[in-house]
Length: 244
Image (cartoon, rainbow, N blue to C red; front, side, top):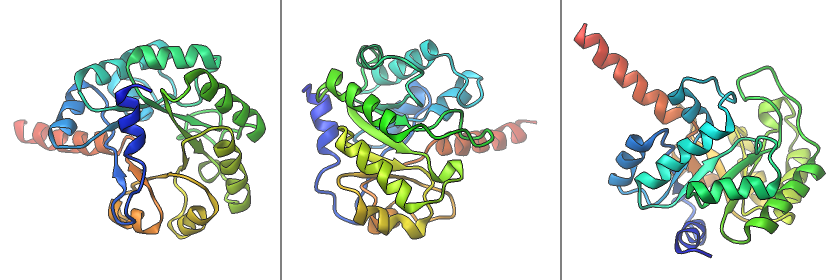
């Protein structure tokens, strides 16, 4: 295991309940340096944020451009970087792992549904097939990549706790290091914490619990999706309005 991969994995261990790992989501090299300078120990690129920065809709970035973009982020900072690579772009595990390692990242998000989040609900993948894919990625990557397995039940209209837990447990058994039930309702977070072994990722939603509050509910780490890009763009709109 490289030192960066080991350091990133260690950040997820032995977290106090109100002290989750907070991973800002840079969309380019400049934003990554801002977050690094602020003292964050690691970063996690959001696919939707990178897409917006490149002029694409969420889910529409050609894979080559996505890997190039996350590579620029990883090269710009000294802290570990994890990359959201959606569903893996249909790439075989060996190809996907090779491109991630070539980009210089130490972790990845892999989701279990088709189609972008903002579109009409796309189908969930067969959980066993997804588990097999995660196992193949783990086998190729060894411990060089921290795998964050995203469970898309709640954003795909399957608000079923039992099904969510079934998928999460399959992915952990397949070798996932962390489970990310995206946009799970706040009131089910404690049940997810009780029912899933290992680190849990939850997304910060404006108006919802703070990162510390999410930690108290059961989050091991907190990410932001494209939310920080949206906040930056709102601030830039204000600057633009003043200039006019």
